Length: 305
Image (cartoon, rainbow, N blue to C red; front, side, top):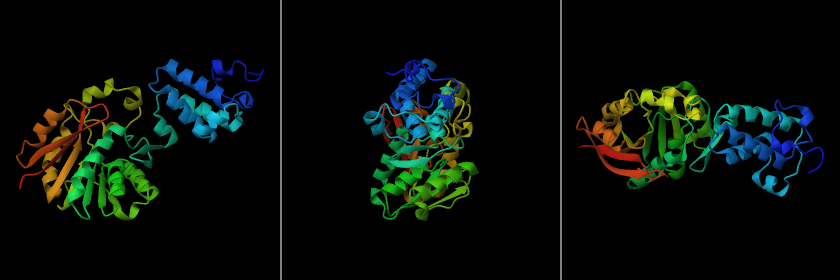
């Protein structure tokens, strides 16, 4: 380590200024950023440090490995300092970058949308399975947010078309941009709506990741979620079941005769959600799928003919 880089790995400059350009290398910046995130109690400090370093400097993971002593210039330092401050305030990396990956798709996200998570891919796998018997299926995504679930299914089924519904116009703007980004805009349309109550029957699959956090539980969530993700997409009412009650009323109106629905649930909610959805005697649940942790994450059902 030369005189210019000595000590940099012990901590990132605060505030970051152009004077640090040339003193900091890819590897020293990554190590220092990781250490700061660890001290802040951030859950994934190694991954977050790498992703923000790549975004701030325009390098790849391979560059960090093969050219670790590449110096950062003034713009790199300023951007990385801005990103570091935002992450230390527990802003999610996906919001800082404006994008995330879901089911192999590169999707835009914003504070108007939930960040799609790998656990929700259980719904996509469930949907692919249930659509095997349908040719040219019509898909409805209620509470579409970024459009992740609908677009993943359309990507998996090139003969499918779909509609995404959300009450938040800003979220729909992100979903529409993602449809164009994924070359799926010709098969997807999006509209403002309230969980499908004004839509006509005829969808072969209805999929939904509704708000299901009990209202009093929001305060106990990790700060990344509690302080940054939209409460409109989290708050499931006093017991977390408000939107399942609405689905109980609306699903029979939008499903085709042989259509199925899939809903996401939180850990430990299988019994209460099943009881809620079957309470009117118009729907029956028949299958479930686990998430990466082994918790039941997706429930599938159909209309009672």
